[in-house]
Length: 436
Ligand SMILES: [Zn+2]
Image (cartoon, rainbow, N blue to C red; front, side):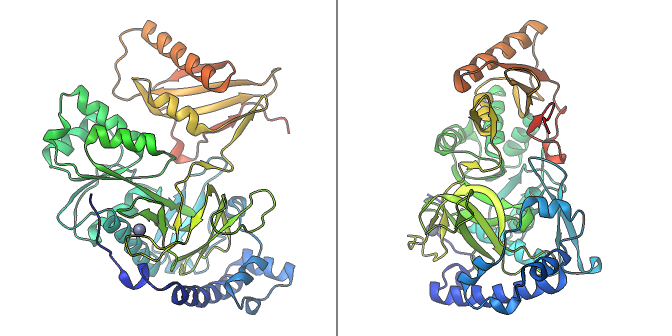
């Protein structure tokens, strides 16, 4: 198994009492800066009669209100920035499930810290300067591509920024450039594996050894599939654009939860309904407070991601708490005729159907009685259906599988590749005719 090295022992292996002291100092500084320099927080502190000096312990954080996704949207584009724009050297955008995008800014120091966190992440996964790293996250306003790119360069690996694109091309690059590490979304890794098989490229003939995957929800079954088909060790990574992008947490060689960069992020787990903080080990919504960000400090930011924390020591030597793998998002749920539908479930069904792409949209029409659900699904960019009949058969096949899964009829419409671009602000869930 790969792994074993640690990029930054000072922070990754810091005794927890010392770590908590560091967190408190950084928290106080962050709260001060936010209350003084971010209009949104300034107003909030004033309205609620809270003063930065009220934060004397880490628990005092609970006296502050949450920051929610809509607060960021309402502050579009630059309202959450704590520094003048001339100090911002990079602007990214978060990929939301609904509504308009949220903007994320970085100062030069923020970029340096971000790069360092991703270097920790890569090192924990066993990536070294001897590796050839192929990144197929998108390069653009989304943080995945650039984030991993910077980190991989920092550790001295040879980076190939292939970005999104033709799946066969990914296989060719992998084969010809002797890629050893692949980084991107897990379901796309499966598509690459399928493309390799189609092209007659035997995974034994490739040099691949490690994959780091994130950006979407996946589970142990998918991990096993990826490992078997590509003959690699697959690691889960977690990032959230609003708080900086990839590098927030990552698996080590133990692959028993994702170590959180707690010197940079303070994490709470809350009951998503009551907002109450839950004790370690209980499952709830993860809430992040940034501890070192200059351009855009966030206090108690509700991630919408459901998980639990483990503060037990890890066999790798890191003292950083671990979060469980994310199984779903709190706000990514669609209720149709009383049935909870998570887009991830639909995604898993689609992943099993040949010729189908990654992109889909669920459209619910509530003006009909009962509510009617449609799934708009892109065919794969490299699929070549022989006839209209093939497409209809595929539609029916998906309809049947979704009916089995959800217990209700779903109309499936296949779309041309590229019709949906969910990284550019289109949403996964669409209310065709909202009631309100
Ligand atoms: Zn560990």
